[in-house]
Image 1: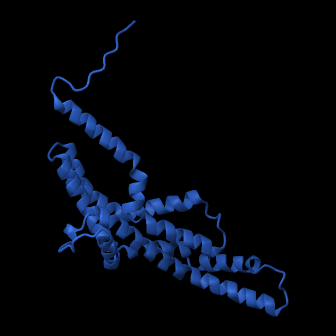
Image 2: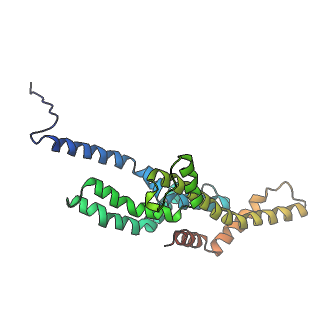
Image 3: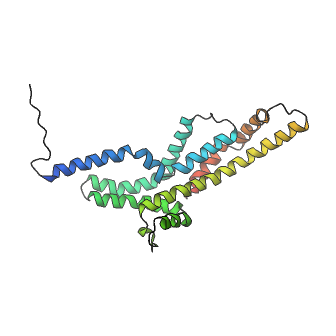
Length: 224
């Protein structure tokens, strides 16, 4: 029977152990990439607004969820490309070349994300979590902890997404009201208004080039 040996550490002492810990941390971060993508990027706003647009048309299953989420993902990549480029140039590549330590890489890599989130976050939302955490009033944006910035950024994105979604829903609600009033005036109360209004809503969306307008509005809303 072959012998099996389990060795913790190595001839170089703590170096191999630190490499193992770094590998464990790397695998943990990779497993949290989907959650990080939703929390600290433009994905929240884009996905919600696209879902609003699909609901406003009156076809909740068209386009399918895979297409909506795929479009939201690629729009997120487009919006976040300058931020990721800066993270790669200032933190990732120097760390891979052993020019800086992991702590320095994390500090330099989080700086562009902090700047992006603070730019999209309302001061009122920041003040909410600072007061809930009973923290001292920060003097500069760099004094705000990251665990305060992330939830503040998320609720700011939710509010902005619902505001944009309301503006998308409004014209389609008007079409439903006009069609419903016309059917009631003709005495056709048994006919569902959505059956008649759906072709008009699709026609309006296509004639206005809705996906173009929504994509442009989403990208420019981030200051891109």
